[in-house]
Image (cartoon, rainbow, N blue to C red; front, side):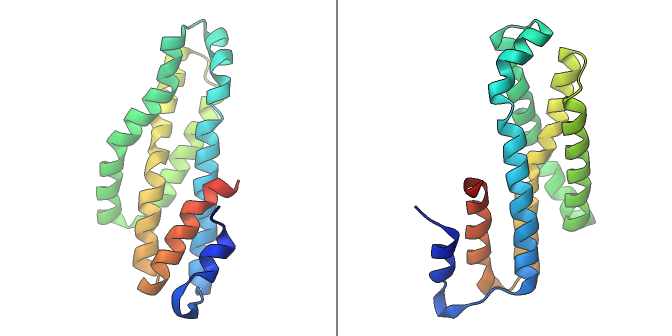
Length: 158
């Protein structure tokens, strides 16, 4: 099993990550873990959602599908917005919209509103690509492989 310590010990040339790299890693790994948790917590809730809204299993599948489809549609749009208006600004705006959608989804009064909010929540699927681009822009190129490995390991450590 790959661990954070094994990744750090295998860094060529004894490269030490800068304090800026550690700050970015902490933020981006936390965002990845939160987003993964929020998306996966829905799976065991599907039977309850079916009962609460009186829907079938196939209708409940749209709770997951709406988010994925909307996320795929949002990704290139947000990428272009990040190129034009700044990655950090777009990342923060995306996170705000995402967290508001997550909060409102928990209180959705009807099935169509739940699906609409889950689709808006799909914006969260664009967080990691923007975050990785931020890492590549802000850090020393020698730090990229290590930071990318550590960020990709974060969801598995939770």
